[in-house]
Every structure is written in C-alpha cells, then in structure tokens.
Length: 172
Length: 172
DNA sequence: TATTGTTATACTCTATAACTATA
DNA sequence: TATAGTTATAGAGTATAACAATA
Image (cartoon, rainbow over all chains, first blue to last red; front, side, top):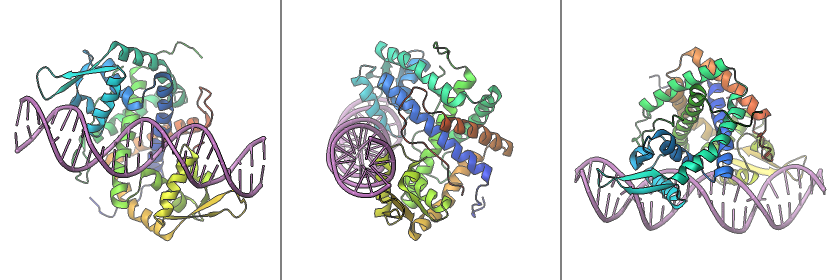
C-alpha cells in the first residue's frame, strides 16, 4: 500500500519485458500461420478451438464464448458474424433463454481447425519450446499459471468497471 | 524434423496458453493505464521509452528505433508522426546519412514518460509480480530470456521473408 | 430493472506497394 | 542497385453508446 511506487529491479523488469516480447513475437508468428494456412485471425481460431476442442457439444452461448477471448460484446458479435459468414459456425436462438444465442461449430469449422492445428503446434514448438529443457517448460507453466489465476481473481486494482472476465483455454 | 507433428502434452500446452493469456491480460491493462494517464498507446510508450530511458542522447535513427517495436516501416512512420504531432519527439535529417531521419525525444516527451511510469510499474506489480515469490520471478526471467534469445536468433522456420528484426528493451 | 445480443458509428492501427532521394 | 523513409490506400479489428427483446 506504499504510494511511492518503488521502481522495479532488473530481474522484475527483465521478466516483464521478456514476457511481453516473447508473447508478442509468438503471437505475431502464430497469426501469420493461421492466416496463411487457414485464413483465420487469432481470435477466430480461439473461438473455433473453444467450440471444437473444448465444448463436448460443439455449442456455446455467446456470453460464455466471450469469456477469455474478447473484451467487448460487440467484438464477439463481429467475430461470430465473420465465422458465420464463412460457414464455420451457425447461430441460433438459445433453447432455454429466448434472449440468448447459441453458437455451434460446423463440420467445416472442425475441418478448418484440424487443418490449421499441426502448423500451429509446429510454430509453438519451434519458436517457444525448442530451446527450453523439459524442466523449464514445467516451471514456466507453473509460474504463469499462478499469475493467470491471480489476474483472473484480481480485477484491476484501480477500480475500473469490470468488462468481461476471461476464462479457460481449449484443453486440446 | 519429423513431419508428423506430435501433439503437445498438457504441460507444453498449458505453458503456451498461460503465456498468451497472461501477456494479453497484462498488455490490455497496461494499455488502459497508458491511455488514461498519458494518452499513449503501448507502441508509442515503447518508442518514447527507448528514446528517453535507453538512448544516452535521446535520439535514434528511424531504422534502429523500429527494431523490437514495430513490424513494418510504415507503421513506425505513422507512430512517429503521431508523436511528433503531439510534440513528444522531433524528427530531423540524420547528420551522417542524408537519407536517414533522426528522432529525438523532447522535454515534453520525457515528462510524459515520467508521468506515466509510476502507474505502469504499479500495474506490473499488482497484476504480474504480486503473487510470485522472488524465486519465481527469477526463473520466469531466466526461462523467458532463453526463449527470447532463441526467437531473435531463429527467424521463422517456414522460410518467411524477414521483416524487421526486433531488439533490446529499455533498461530503465 | 437487469441481461442478452446486435447495430451504428467512429476510430486506431497495420501492412503493402509505389515512390523519392540518397549511398 | 540497394537502402531510408514517406505516402496512399485499403482493410481488419475494437469499443462505446443506443437499442430491442426477453427475464
């Protein structure tokens, strides 16, 4: 609760900058791969992966789908619209709640994910995992998992109004 | 060199997804903070930080400035233009090479960085560092540093034409 | 009244290609 | 010929606010 924010030391700063750069570089490369091999943006891939790999039914409500992928509702509507236009998902009124919309992945959607996945994995391996010892991957996992849990639990300290909480990733 | 890409195991996948989500969440929060407290985008902040905190002279060539921050030359021109319009940097022909342009941070630019830095540090602390033990921060740093080094050295395997190599962060 | 989702709109950012000028 | 940087342009994505429909 000190209000004189002490500067970060070299290790803290290094961890932060390395995190940002590594993630940025990785994401940029993955985005290219997804675009070239599957004509998908990263967000679109995430949505398809949630539906195709995570959901047992291949369906999810818009609201649930938004969690962890998008920061605004209209953003999800936009992306879902693109996926629908590309025939990769369908949208239909939710069975139980007339206000809701259920998004369902199509066979073409599943095929698209399958088409893109090997290349995706390859990028992650080549770019991120390759130089790391197994033990390092394990610590990386553990530490980032702590951070993630904390971030999900702690909404921005600065009392910003909550937007969308973000949630689990595909368990592929 | 196996061409049948074996899938990633749970730990590898977890490390990847956690990395993406943590970085995304952190970046999103930092971007809000920078926008609100300093009317800066993250890229603009990075550029100012390079000039103000890294460079002894407060000046850098466009090309050097691009490294590590931006993926296209026109993108840098655009951002530098915004910073110049906001009086945070100046642009002038390079002394030695008539083709080049030297970007220099102004006093107002330095002031802007100073204004924004405490809040920036606070976000990183609260959101990323707070739940981690010192030892975890150290391993995180070490592991990500390996990954970063590897990424910088290894251009996209898939033989993509090189865009811009990316480089060091502010040593603030 | 609160929630779900869409629409309209405006804006920011990015990238490609064509171009100018200097090395 | 190659490099530095800009410009024109076009497209993708995001967010806010207003709105309609249902709970």
